[in-house]
Length: 109
Length: 112
Image 1 (cartoon, rainbow over the protein chains, first blue to last red):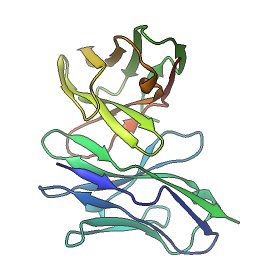
Image 2 (image 1 turned 180 degrees about the horizontal axis):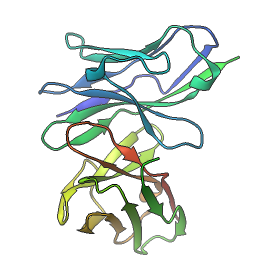
Image 3 (image 1 turned 135 degrees about the horizontal axis):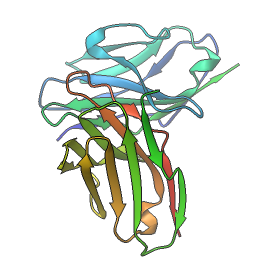
Image 4 (image 1 turned 90 degrees about the horizontal axis):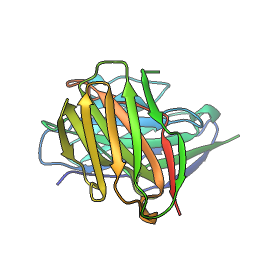
C-alpha cells in the first residue's frame, strides 16, 4: 500500500538558518512526489513537484529512490516561509494524491 | 485561485443529522476530490470522482457518500453525522497528467 510519512509535526528554526522538512514514502510503482503548502488564511497550493526539478521560493526537493525520501530544503529560511507543509504521492492510474501528516514550520525572527 | 467554491463554509450540527457539503467548479476539470484535514492525520482522501457519475472510495470513506451528476458539482453527504466526523473538509479539482490539485477554501464541520 502507498504511504507518505512526515516524521516532524512541528519544526521551528531561526530566520536565515537552513531548513529541511523530511518526507519518506512507500510505493510499489514509480513514484511521483509533490510538496504542497498552506499559508495562514490561504488555500492549500502546490509548491513543487519532483519531475520539474525546479526551485520555488528558494525551496528544492530531490527524490532519493534508494532511501525512499523526498525531503524539502531551503538554505536560508525567511519569516514568510512559516506555513503548513504537506508531502504528497500520486497514485498512478487512480490519479489521486496521498498526503503525509504535515509539518508546521515556524520561522523565528 | 482556481474557480472552486465550497458551501457551506461553516456548519454546526447535531449527532444523527444528515449533512451535505457542496463543491462547485468552473474549470471543467475531470477529477474532483474530497479530503478531510485533522491534526496529526494530515489530509485523508474520502472519495473522489473521475467523471460524471464515476466515483470511487478513498482511505476514509465509511460514513460518507458522494454524488456527481454534472461536471461542475461534487456533493459529499454524511447520512447520519457523528462526532468523529468533526473536521475541516477540502474539495480539490485536477486533470490527468499534471498531478497538481487546486483546493477550495475548506468547510469546517462541527458535530455536537
